[in-house]
Image (cartoon, rainbow, N blue to C red; front, side):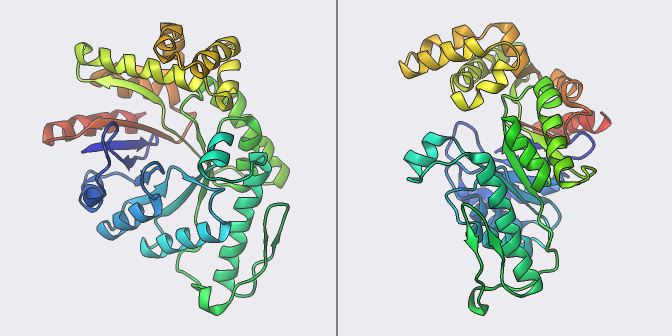
Length: 352
């Protein structure tokens, strides 16, 4: 099993998956119960090879205390009403433990994987969140939803399809983001932000947080309980020998992300826009083996956290302490000794 931990500095939230292997959906209930027994605050699941709402339903049935959330579900291929129903069901099933994490995806996936028309994602996501909340409000308080926007016009709820009120109607919504505009949208309408792994600590502090505050000020919102959760690029292993291949892998990952136009802003902010452009050319030519060579150690250290098990928690705490609420990382947990190592890491981050 691989435990993917989301570690707010002062709280502990985990996710669950098996990087590099096919996820075994039959083990979700067992693994979720194990995560809860380790004392985590929240269990997150991403949308890659399985529907995260189905997986979290299994986890909800197997747990009683640990929070649950999507990190993230892709919003636009789903109607806001469909997403509202999935979240409402999970919130009721988990007795108020669910967080709805939403992402936009990039143009190529929206058009070519989901077969949809592309639209600027920031305004689209603002409408999406407000539409979801309009549906929830109608279910909780009665009457018809009343949302009218450029993308959605939702005004109908009939008894047959109305689940009615639940005990915990406030479902936090967190938005994945890179560019400032979507950070502003999160500040306007969401309860939290999930920076992409390429968003450095400096980028979060100097670009993303100011944008969140700008959006919040536009709506007159306070940010006292606003969450910022990041899954950094991390290379870690028990010792230096086993760390080396992890470093090679994460160097290739940085190169891949730098080649993606949607993430260019996170590189240009550090004067690396030309590097991102060069890597984009290489990726389009499918010259994959040349790309990691363009990521020198300085760039690697800026975008990834690298260290052995006895170093990594301290490095994460120094980099993100006081800046974000949640930091996510993974180590293999195959036996009680591994679980003890993980608990020691959590203790370091809690102390921070």
